[in-house]
Image (cartoon, rainbow, N blue to C red; front, side, top):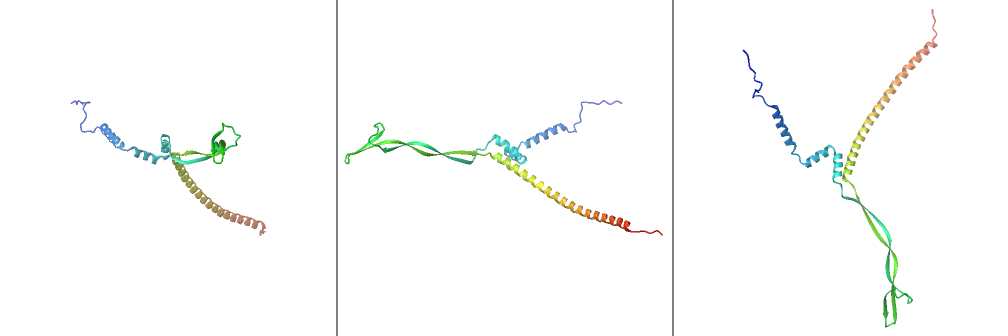
Length: 197
């Protein structure tokens, strides 16, 4: 008896794993696309605030006025003042003439140039980047945590060094005691006279 095997026939009861994988991938892609831009920015800011601050500084520079700087400059300015003039003045310089017929007085007025100091204010506006401040704050907080960690390690090593110093003194005292005993025995051996009988 010979059996013929059909190679094109697949059993219907087995699940096709390729289709299930594609469906799962589509479901994951659909759920992952539900994040808004604000949520994504918040997530990125929690992960690496310095990188987000640098990116936003480049894209959206800060334009808020932080500190105005005012400089006051005094300059000389020429103004003309009308003054009474002598009778011997040039007729072309006379601005106006007032004639008093009762008292028979003629007053001629001329314009005289006078230098007057004039106050000028120059206001320089200083702008600071808020992203730069954020980056500096992140770096300062990291440096503070590193400093605190280094201080704790330093204190731990100081405690170990103090403990080892005490142990070393104990071992030195013990070694000194044994050296003293050895020297004492040698001294006794040298000073003791032994007689053989």
